[in-house]
Length: 198
Image 1 (cartoon, rainbow, N blue to C red):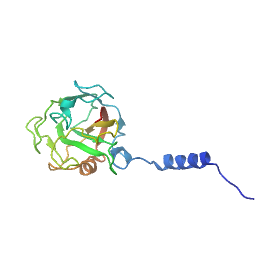
Image 2 (spheres, rainbow, N blue to C red; image 1 turned 180 degrees about the horizontal axis):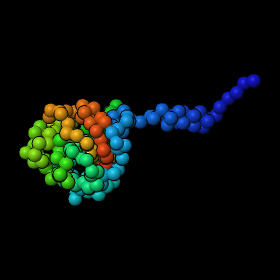
Image 3 (cartoon, rainbow, N blue to C red; image 1 turned 45 degrees about the horizontal axis):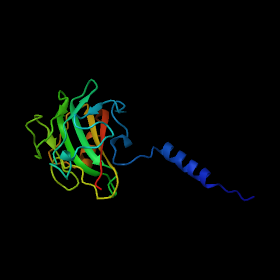
Image 4 (cartoon, helix red, strand yellow; image 1 turned 90 degrees about the vertical axis):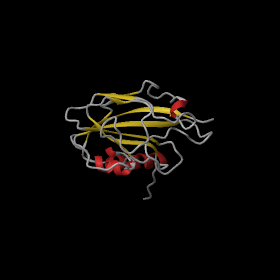
C-alpha cells in the first residue's frame, strides 16, 4: 500500500525533529549548555536614547556621528564577576549577523556605559574593559549603516553576566568571545533598536 504525506505533515515532523535536536542559530551562546542555567531576558537593558523596538537616533549610526549610545542594565544575578556586550544585526544580507560592537571584561559593579565609548582596545573607563573587532573589522563600535532600500534592520545589544573573569586579550571577534564565555553565562538580556536607510 502506498502512503503519502501532505506538505503540512512533512513540515510538522521537520519542525518537531528540529525542536528535539535543539536547533538554534549557531552564533548564539545559548545554542549549547550553559553554566547554572542561563536565563534569556533576566537582565533588563535600556538606553536613554531609544526604547526597545524603536528607531536608533541618527547620531549613533554611520549616517551620523557614528558613536555608541549610552546603555544601562539591571537585574544582574548574584555571583556576577564580569559583564560582556555584543551588538549585531541579524537582518544584514550576509551569512551571519553583522557585528557592530564587541566589548567585554566590564566590571560587575558597573550598571551601564556612557555614550561615545572611544574605539580603543583597552579602556580606562570602565577600568579594565576591553573591546574587540566588529565585522568591518575595526575595534570598538560602528553604528547601523544597512543597504539603502533594504528595509528595517534590528540591532541587538546583548548583555551577558558572567560567573568568572575572562582570561582573554583585547581584539577578540564575536565568535572568539562567545567561545571564551561558554559555560560562564549566568544570565543575559537585550535591547533591540531599529534603523533603515531609504
